[in-house]
Image (tube, rainbow, N blue to C red; front, side, top):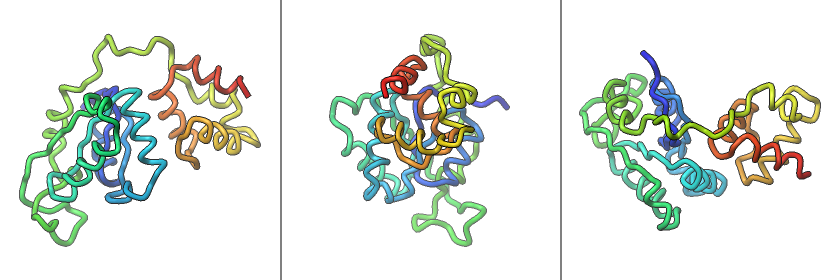
Length: 197
């Protein structure tokens, strides 16, 4: 089945949620690492950048922890960005995820355990519309190479410098950096930023 194309970034709690969402949607997925978001300044900054640039879809579990994380995300964003955050709530379905030995405290499935068709229906209203097409072509892996951000001896250092300049998390792989840059910036902006050194 074809993946849903989303122009907004999707925020989920953990890596298994991310795996589930990336199996059905073509989009950037940010994980909060559960309550890890509370102590990760760079992650909070990244979430704010996505809220400003493309908007966010917050898709946390429907349990108490999920609701707490959802509320916290809203609290770290200025009020003027709240309209750029869409909250999607999964239905409360009793059960446990296959990989777990016991159900959650509340006995309901999280994002990773919910049927893919349900998630598709929940995300369908956010599918990319033609008017949201970027003004310029996105950066490619070849562009990263030509800009010295991949496949060159100093590529790792240049990526780190760029991430610092743009206040993005450091240690990003070339593919992760490419996703972030194409979501947050136009191609020409990135080239200008790199050439301004």
